[in-house]
Length: 116
Image (tube, rainbow, N blue to C red):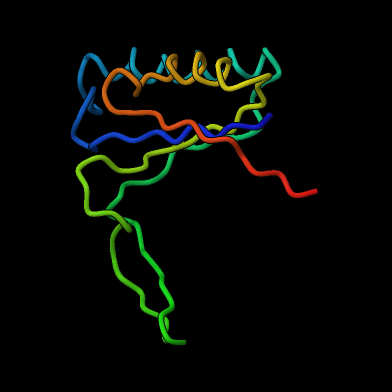
């Protein structure tokens, strides 16, 4: 089964670039990515640019509306994702708990709907 791990955190929460803690924090991401790659679980994943670069598009009544910023006005924002191929939800949750931002924000785990 495929699962998407959506990584949410406030941009100013957790280790920040230029701090002593940032190097080990990023190393945690490199280590996790290597672990799921070597285990044959990694199907994809990327970090996202700052929420300040987001643009939201909606269409209502045939009219397209474009708004600067993210869809949700919340402190925690989507910062990246992994798509993992796991045997079940329990395995996906175990991997999600190893994502470094699970210690600072949240990781939402959702099954991917596969259309054949």
